[in-house]
Image (cartoon, rainbow, N blue to C red; front, side, top):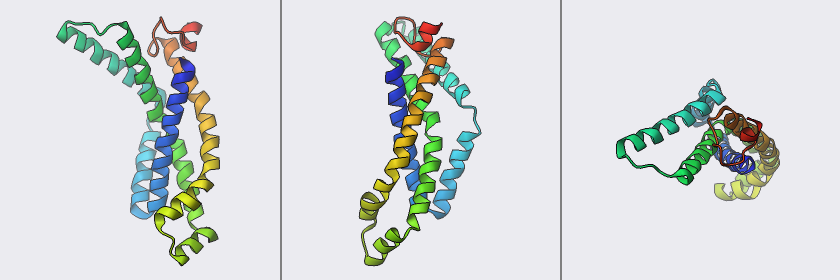
Length: 178
């Protein structure tokens, strides 16, 4: 369970961060400034506290739904909701660094001679991106993805250890440590 949530959260974070950073770096100007200030605001918030708050809020919503409808979801649905909550919450806080790294790479690659040559001979922007920019971004993206997986696994294990994440019947590293 820890590995599955870690891999899913890391993949989602890399995908979100890559898209965000690429859009910011490719657009440049005011769009870049606004997008990176949003990243700065998210960086200012305590990450684990946000994950804890999201997990507690989802538990409260589930308990409220059970109280208002009078029907229980069943243990399987509750476990699925807990796993999905962790996946989304960890991915939502993990994409910030990759967005900055990718944005920096895009800004650097835009000024390289091969990109200037593409613009000079009239290569369409879409082809510039997919044929020249994206292959050069693959290295940093892969490196960051390999660093994000253990961070996401540790975050899941920490939250499960506290009793907020994956619950008792599922074997999570945090549950086993607790």
